[in-house]
Every structure is written in structure tokens, then in C-alpha cells.
Image (cartoon, rainbow over all chains, first blue to last red; front, side, top):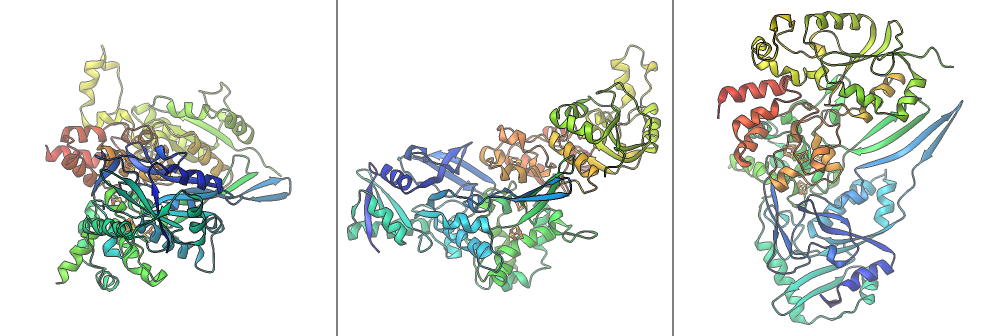
Length: 369
Length: 262
Ligand code: SF4
Ligand code: SF4
Ligand code: SF4
Ligand code: SF4
């Protein structure tokens, strides 16, 4: 793999080249006290000189002592909102006398560049690839947008307080699923980016940029950076035999304890970059001549989610929390042959009462030893 | 072929009229409504009164007087389908604050001749008095949701009114959680969706004006508020005692918390 160096002064060229190649850029930016994902016009839209402090149920933006472009970890948004939008109309129907006309929705045409995708997030996209386009029934929206995507990843050189990608073997180094990966090097006297292409598209992009070849020392800085992040993991999860562990503990008393705390608010599932559940909503207007079908994000924490004739199958909060956690860490393996958790820590940070998936699992494991 | 237009009635009990105003506020949609349904009784909108029975009755307000307790029975008897709209009608409203105190004492402070006042000790939701077919929460209700309820009724389908948390709307909109990112107390995790996470979108905590969501866990949220956000017990009791103070889960939690003390 060819490794190149882009200077901080020339970083804007990445934006220009992406635009020239027809991509709209989305990536991290500050809004309402957090780093979210949104449209980016120029380098200064990035959270330059900011970082985030994260722990269970708490997130705060903090000023860094330097001007790093990628000196933070993941926030409340995830990339899934671009591939699997929160609300999407699937079709509408109009009745005109005795005829019914159905109009389907158009598919996305825009080419998107995801800028600053972390290793755990790449894995999350690969997991959702399996869900949305891996089986017999493929999601046309997801497929179309996914095919019009360039992934510019960023290696983490620092980790957040709720990160555990090392435990989930998904990071902090990006090893697959990217077109180009960036590692930021920031020292008193220099500010540069080590770039590596992962695909021909990435190679092509690299060829557009004012870069020079990296020295072996500079390549080594990438190793040091990710090693530093690996040492800083805020959370740990022992994954050995995790599927069997949870599946033989469906009646464990710990579920009762966590159900006392859980609000069944669904925040954890909505922020999770791999959760893929949706519900389909049919509506009609007052005249009954116009109907629409929408697909909205849903969650196993709602009562409607498991509503069958007669009521909800998971009426207790206990059963809903257990569904979420065992799906992520256990039954996902049965379903998709991979873990449903990539160790990004979002569900821990954004749980309004700080429930921690690693702590819950560790408690069950400990009770067995 | 369309049969006779269904007859709609809108009734007012103890309330501020805000929910009725929401219906009037539907503007263009209201005109469409008027062409699909016969507005048979709606004093706030028209003087015309068509006699019952009514196919759909929308009821605003709570029951606070002996007279209203009788009148709601008549409304029920004259209605095929009865839907309550707003916090007053579904939970007793702000006026249910009396339920926690002595109403005779209030009356003696407020009125020059309290003996003229005929009022019940408690403000009760419509469902405590008669059978209700559907309850639409919110203070006031949302325009979008009332149109959805009426459209569903007209088209013989189930209304799409999810009973999950405000958090789900908040997150779907991409709003940054004010509680996690700023430490602002928010009732979103126990509150019924419908407002579109209005307050969090404007950087405030949710005030719970849509009332309790399905299976709310109030004690857990309040433990977090008090333990992590430094909210005082008396304030967490108060925040549960606003527009939906007499909604069962809110009432039970605030009463329990008061009993436990600081
Ligand atoms: S379960 Fe939690 S830590 Fe794991 S991928 Fe989902 S949000 Fe991230
Ligand atoms: S954890 Fe719940 S919301 Fe997430 S994918 Fe599984 S069932 Fe769906
Ligand atoms: S675990 Fe936390 S975020 Fe998830 S539903 Fe329960 S309270 Fe909400
Ligand atoms: S701001 Fe309030 S409503 Fe929004 S996610 Fe946070 S707790 Fe829920």
C-alpha cells in the first residue's frame, strides 16, 4: 500500500478534489454542544481544536491545547442516517375516481464522501451491509447510496471514555472498508496527515492531492498513534464465549436490576450504528384519496415493536433490555455471523441514566466465576 | 359512492380552549375537514347546532363540577365514538393540582363568596367518568396528530400515534441530547412522543406536556436527576406536577417521592 504525506496547509485540497470528483462531503462538525455529522463545505467546518469527554450518561465538549482536526472520538450521530434515513416515504398513492395511481419514491443520486470515519464505524457499516444488502431482500435505497459513497477514514490516535473497539477487535486501526485513511500527526513543529489508499478510488483521489511519499519513520508514527489509542480504551469487554454466556443466562437476576434502571427510552438503539430496525406506517389524508407509506426508525424498546394480536410480546422492560443486549452480543452471531456491537460506546454515553453494556455483561460473567 | 357525511361534535369541559384552537389552527386542512365531515356542534367555530347523535365527539377539558359530571354522560350517550383531546381531558389537566390539596381552602382564598362555588374535590379525566374510545395526549395537542386521528376515524383505520418516548423523536431529528451533553434535566425519556421534541430542539429540557409514555420508569429518571444533575427533591416533585399531574404514573411517582422526602 502506498503511503503519502499531506500537509495541514494543503488539507483543503482534499475538499476541493472530492468536490471536483462530484462528491458532497459529510463529516464531523460542532452543533448544539456536540460533534455531529453534517454537510461540510470547508476545512474550518471540522471541529478544529476540540475534543470530547465521555462517560456513562455524560458527554462534554472540551477545548484541546492544539489545533487537531480529528482530535475527538464518536458523537451522538452515526453514518447510518445517510444510508438508512430516520424517516423515508416508500410510496404514495392517489385515487382518482376508480383508478389508483401509485408513485414510488426516487432513489438517491447524490455522491457522498464520508470524511473522518473511525475504525469501529467502518465495521458498523460492514455489519449493516450484511443486513441491508447481504441477504435475498436488498434495500434499494441503502444499496444505491452505498454504491455512491467514498469512505475517507481516520485512524484514532486517542480513545474516548466509553470506547472498547479493542475488545471487539474492530479498531482503533482501520484495516478494511475504506477508500482512503488518514492519520493525523501533530507535534509542536509539524502538523501533517499520513494517507493510505485502500481501493482504486482512493488511489485516484490520492493522485489528485499535493502529497509526497511518506518516510518509514512517518509510517511508524501511524503504528504509534493507534497503539496509543489502544492503550486508552475507556471500557473493556471480555468477549470469549459471549454468545453462550448470555444465552445460558436468560433468567439471570442481573436483568431485574438493570430493568429497575432502564427507561425503555430507546436512545441506545437509535444511537447504535448497527441497529437497523424500522417500522412501516400507513397514513391517509382526510379525503381518503391520498395515502402514503413511510418507513421510520423503530426500536425493540417500544411496545409496538413486538405487538402481535392481543398485545406486546415483550411487555416488561426486563424483556426489552434483554432483547437489545442479547441481540447485539449474542443472537447477532446466529443471524449475521458477526457481533452486532462494534465497541463504539455510543449506547453507554447517550443512555440518559448511564446504563453500560460492558458493565452489564461483565457482571453476568463475574457471577459465574 | 359516498354515504352521508359523518357528524362531528367538539365539546368543552374544564380547559383553556387551547386544544380547540389547535383544531381551528389547521387552516387549509380545516376547510378540507369541513368538506369531509359535518361540523354539527363546535361552538368555538360556528353558531350552527345540529342535533345528535354524533359519529365522532372530540372532548376537551376535565370534569370539575357536578354539572359537568352529568353533562359528560349526555355527551357519551349522544356519541358513537368519543375521543378525548389534550392533557385536561386525558389526565385532569393543570387544574388537577387541586387533587393534592384541599379545594375548599383554595375556594375560600380565591372567591369572595365561596358558598356560591359548586366544585368537585378532584379534577378527573374523561375516562374516569365515561368510556373513552381513544385518548390523544398533549398540552396542547399537535395539529398533525389531531388530523391523523380524524383521518383515521374517517377511513376506518387505526391512528398512527406512537406511545413511545420523546427521545425517539429527538434522536430521529438529530437533536443533541440536552441532558447528556449539557446536564439539563429532561423529561423526554418518560414522556409520550408527539411534539417532535420541540423543547430539546430549542435547547431546553422536555417539560412532559404530552404526559406519560407507555411503561414510563419515573423513579429511575428522578434518581438520575437528583444523583447526577443535582436536582432537589422538591423540584423533581414539582416538575411532575404540571399539566399532567394526575396522570397515574406521574401522580404515583410524585406522591411516593414526596413521602420519601429529601
Ligand atoms: S451496542 Fe453500543 S457500543 Fe456496541 S456498537 Fe452499538 S452503540 Fe456502539
Ligand atoms: S437491538 Fe433492538 S433495535 Fe437494535 S437491531 Fe436488535 S432488535 Fe433492532
Ligand atoms: S439502556 Fe438506557 S438508553 Fe437504552 S432504553 Fe434503557 S435507559 Fe434508554
Ligand atoms: S434531550 Fe431529552 S428528549 Fe432528547 S434524547 Fe435527551 S432526554 Fe431524550
